Image (cartoon, rainbow, N blue to C red; front, side, top):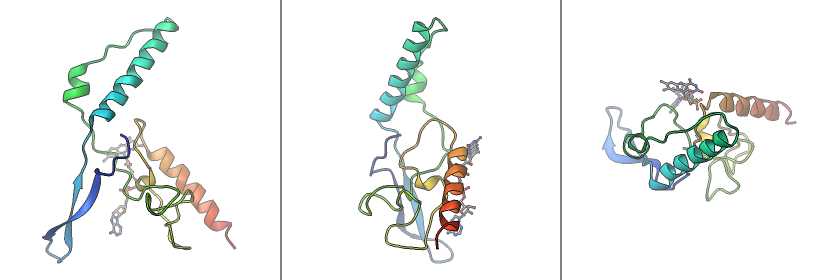
Amino acid sequence: MSPAASNRVFLTEERNRSGLYRPSVKCVVDAEDRLSVDRTLRRLGHSLIETGKGRVRIDNGRLYRSVTGGGHLMGTTRMGATPSGSVVDRDCRVHGYTNLFVAGSSVFPSGGYANPTLTIVALALRLADAIASEP
Ligand SMILES: Cc1cc2nc3c(=O)[nH]c(=O)nc-3n(C[C@H](O)[C@H](O)[C@H](O)COP(=O)(O)OP(=O)(O)OC[C@H]3O[C@@H](n4cnc5c(N)ncnc54)[C@H](O)[C@@H]3O)c2cc1C
C-alpha cells in the first residue's frame, strides 16, 4: 500500500470505561494500491514467459473486489527525514528527542507484500547496536 495521509489512526469523541478517548482506524485500499498489485503480477507474468517457466492468471474478482488481509499493522510512527512527514528518523529515534526510540513495524513508511517480522527484528537489532554504541 502506498503511504496515503488519509489512512491513519485517530482519536474519536467517545471515551472508554477508563475515561480515555477511543481510537479509530481509517484504512482504504485505493485504486493505486490495486493497480500496483496488477502491475507487479504482470511483470512477474512477463518474466515467467520470457524464461519459459510458467504463466500468471490474474483473477480480477479477487484483486479488485475482495482484497483480504489485516494482520500486518504498520505505519503509525513512520520513518522519514523530517518531523513534518514522519515520527522517527532513519535510526528509529523520535524526531526532537535524544532518548526515545520506536522498535516495531509502526516505523515502516509503507506496507509491502512480504511478511514483516524479519524486517522488524533486523531494525530492532540495528537499533540495539546503535544505542549500545552511544557514549
Ligand atoms: C494472525 C497473525 C498472523 C501473523 N503472521 C505473521 C507471519 O507469519 N509472519 C510475519 O512476519 N508476521 C506475521 N504477523 C504480523 C506480525 O505479528 C506483526 O507485524 C508484528 O507482531 C508487529 O510487531 P510490533 O512489535 O510492531 O507490534 P506488536 O507485536 O503488536 O507489539 C506491540 C506491543 O505494544 C504493546 N502496547 C500497545 N499499546 C501500548 C501502550 N499504550 N502501552 C504499553 N504497551 C503497549 C502491545 O501490548 C504489544 O505487546 C501476523 C499477525 C497476525 C495478527
